[in-house]
Length: 154
Image 1 (cartoon, rainbow, N blue to C red):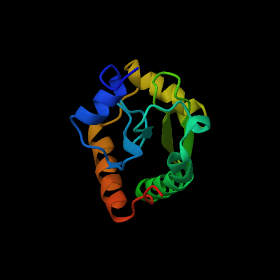
Image 2: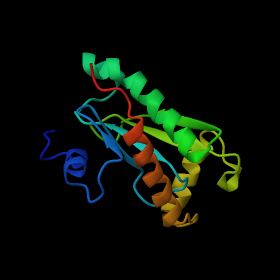
Image 3: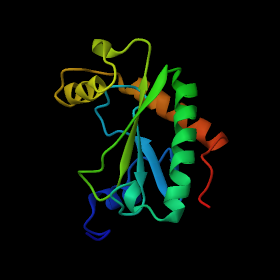
Image 4: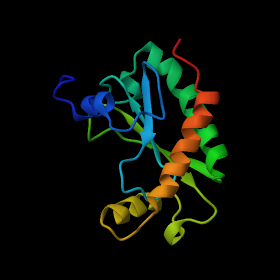
């Protein structure tokens, strides 16, 4: 699949909303609405790469440090107890890691994999989250990452 045919490539280059952070390897943005948890973020590879086994040297060197900084800053911005991380990449030619804040109080008391049930409920219209809260967290995350970005590629 080439960049013209790839929906993710098109989305990253023509998004209505700018990335919260990006460099030549990675793109960070909130999950597409509806969002079940304020601060649910996506780290997306800029190049077509299925996962870490297929990373080039720059992606391999950057991935861990990038995830660490993104997670630390998201935890600080949200006050979450922890940041869950899941990366599958089955639905597109771009690996995408989902960073999900786990707050002391979660809808339906969701923990661990149950947060993905929250996202399915939001997509089905069974769970509503004020878009203003999602926008507030995204703006705070963007500002914090501008001050403390992940290290650049080596």
